[in-house]
Image 1 (cartoon, rainbow, N blue to C red):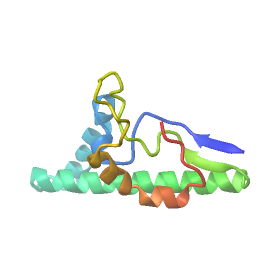
Image 2 (cartoon, rainbow, N blue to C red):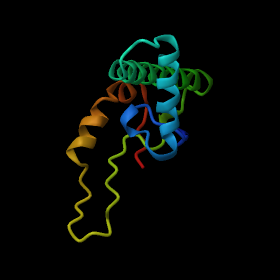
Image 3 (cartoon, rainbow, N blue to C red):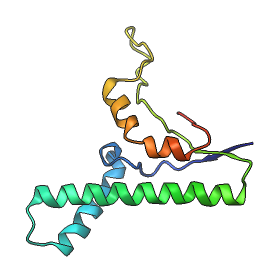
Length: 122
């Protein structure tokens, strides 16, 4: 059957963590700064981004792998992936099409598409 992992408190792509999710960026930056206090800000941010995304990817992949071990017949995937952030349906020029930037960002989640047995877009 359908097996959907649903969490919405953070997202695996750094750039998609805004508003209340910015805390994960701040904490990631703080961790890198603590290890490398002499690094310039741009390097700290880049390393924080890479470490955050690599950790998020590993966590999500391990979650799917463990879930499939427990329920091997489930069609495992994550709620809200992919997401086009194209919810401006109240405007007359709304087409429902995914903006190009979001297509590019979704393409960066290829590892998730390869690991999931089903997609559950929002």
